[in-house]
Length: 303
Image 1 (spheres, one colour):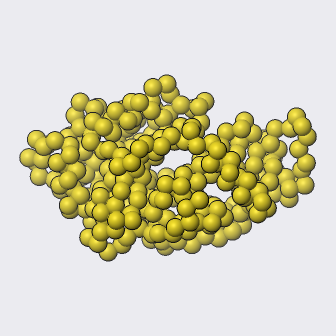
Image 2 (spheres, rainbow, N blue to C red):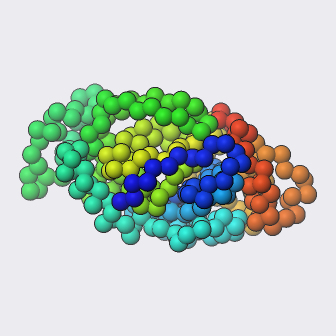
Image 3 (cartoon, one colour):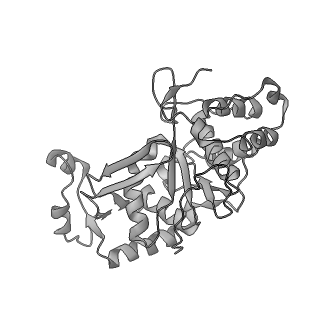
């Protein structure tokens, strides 16, 4: 695996040809406005720093996927002229990499089988590693694989949220009982394999960053830099999400969508920019992107 360790370039407008960023949607539904904000934010940070921007489809959980969602997501990104600068990767085609990573962790004694049910964990007031580590699964036992990091402390600086101290309260699952690889494992393995140096994503993923940083090092790689963009909230104070029935992007109005996303990200685009093609709007924004303009506080979406 790639063991190169890089962090996000910091002093704007310094360029970094080695900067690699990415946008990694899950095909559980079409893109909504909150997704677009993350896509645009990660794209602009990469382009403004002279880097490379990638798209990765996180189609790792078939039971949760919506038929046709992946194609619809890619169509939306294409309509808004957010194009991957390398071939798009699909997690469903990378299972061999995840299994190889599990074997590495197993050889280091960092994973163990867990047969606990959710009900058992609930009754115990939380997961108990000692019980699982003594558990020897039978031939017919359904077990998950967990990563040993409970009780560990992780310190890092987030681009917008500043100094972070995170304590792991439970060993995370890396492979589920149903045989599916977990997000925590796949996202780290893919970021290593693709040489990602800066992860710009939504603030809903800030709390799992400490565990992911530990996984990077356990797999022999330095963690990338991390920046978590503010969440787009609806009028009820809920994060825009597919679970909350967030409206799909209207691909017939890409310029309006992009300008709304830019305003959320702290820009003040001139009114006449609405007449430009998406690529010109993105170029205008990339030339003016500064990280300090981002307000890390959650804000309501006013349409």
